[in-house]
Length: 216
Image (cartoon, rainbow, N blue to C red; front, top):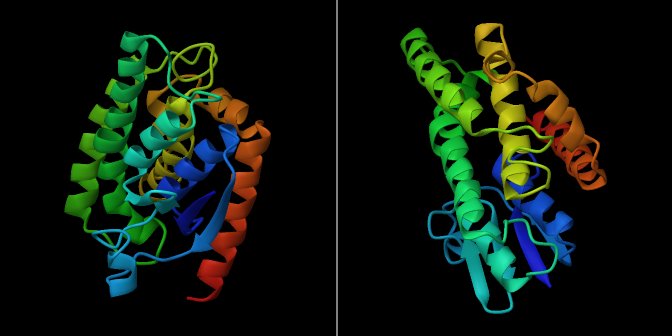
C-alpha cells in the first residue's frame, strides 16, 4: 500500500494522485502541507510535497515518484515501451515543468493567494511563458492525447499543470496564454477531464481549495 502525502490543491500532488489512480495502485492519502517541521523533513528532505511512503521507505519529488510507480507497478503502463518514445515522454514532462510551470509559478502569489507581483516580474514571466509555450506546442501532438493515440504520463503531467498555468495567466494578463499558444488545447483538456479518475481528482481539488481559502 502506498501512502500519498500532500495537499490536493497542489498540481504536483494531483499529478501523482492521477498516476496512482490510472495505474490502479492501491493508496491512501494523508494531508500534509509543505513544512520545515522535523517530522516532515525526515520524510521529504526539503519539506516539499508531495512525497510517498512505500514498503521500502519514503520518496519525494513528483517525477521521481512517477517513475518509481512505473517501475514498481508495471501493470497499466504510463510510459511507452519503445525507448525513443519513452524518451520523448520524458522530454515533454521536463519541458512543461521547467519551461512552463516553473516560470508561471512566479505569478501564483497574486493569481492564487491574494499577494502582489511586480510589473517587472509579470513582464519577464510573460516573455518566458511565450517562449516555453511555443516550444511546448511543437512537442504536443493532440492526436488525441498529448503524444499520440494513447494516454501516457505526458497527459498525467500536462492536465494539472496547463490548467493552473492557464488560470493564472488569465488572472494576471486577462488572457489564457495556454489557449493562445496551443490550438486545440481546450478540446484536449475536455478529453482528459472526461476520464473518471480526472473527474475524481478535480472534485477533490475543488473541495480542498474551498477548505483552504475558507480558512485564510
